[in-house]
Image 1 (cartoon, rainbow, N blue to C red):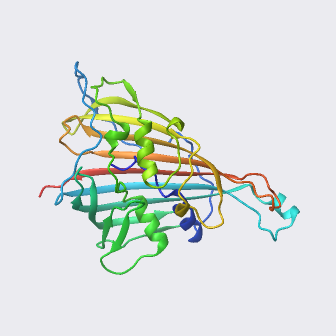
Image 2: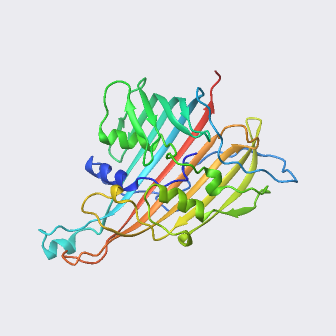
Image 3: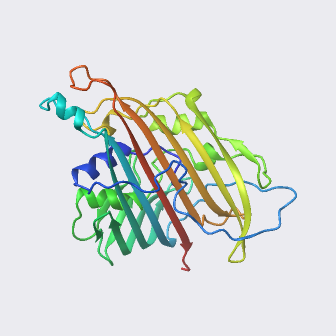
Length: 332
């Protein structure tokens, strides 16, 4: 439901820095993060005929869900000396600086509208708790009881408070725990699915042409030959008496460029590579909803060389975002 398309990573980077997020050293920020850890259930008896893989589970307008989400955003950014800096100061400056912030949300969401494929296009989120943590503070992002309208867009979701206002920083933080798919005509099954039944432990390839189609629709520049990755049926489990499948995948996109509107003014991206990892826990019955959805997105980028700078070599940085969402369908 959440991870297949491109994300506005540069906007997150820009807003976090503009908001003055405290600088800390990130612990446990390795590239192996698949999102927040999820508990595994007891092993289920394996079906000899294998399992149909359905990653996209249509939702219906009027449904309500208990929504619990956690996200972590870590930005490791190059420090580019300004023209007014001296050569000695430039040499003494740190090569990179790292920012990190984590957000937790407990809420009830009501599905207001879906598209023809059952992907959510609009929902209302009534907050029970929404807090952000940095190395120095823990603060409330949205007060309990407030309702936020979330509307999917071509580039990013639009958040609107039904009462009061919230800051640009709050908008960015809340957006990280309310991920909606962009408005487009591809689904997770188009990008990461397979028409063949799979046995536990079997793998299949992602579909580069569909990855290209999804990302290009958001204005990203990439080529299908630079897309690779695999998806695997990791296990069949019993969760609260329900037979479930745990599916994980990884996709890598090399040599891509984000759309111009996604790059802060004055930043010139020369090259970028992203790696996406995800794990989904879904009932084996394809008519039932996703139970857990977690993913991480790592972007390595290089700024173009600037011959006018005191240190004209290319500067590199890394962005890491991990998100985990647990859903529970509530009775009408």
